[in-house]
Image (cartoon, helix red, strand yellow):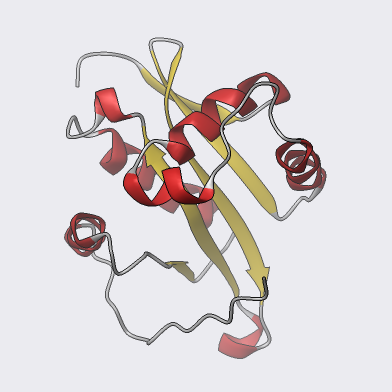
Length: 154
């Protein structure tokens, strides 16, 4: 990739673009509410994220234009001798830039951030309806070692 890919923490000015990326796939379009102005719930969530030192909402930019996003959460555990792990979620590459190595670069960056924080593990969950994503994560070295379960509270 000859173009300049950079990473930075998201600001309130990035919120619409991030929600657009989250909504721009079959599953995201069913659960996100993309309208302007953005629903207040997104703004409140963003404010909570940026105030939490254990959260990093990151924007990937290609030549200064947003092309991807992800959220890292640093979780303190007692297990693994009081180890710290990172959880990566809400990983999206803008639909016009998929298949160009941006996702791989985003994960390279996220892995390095987790190491910088002293994490012993980077974990993720992915929807079983996203087989291409599962294959991508496996190509990066992620291994499905556990069976994840969720309880919907709404």
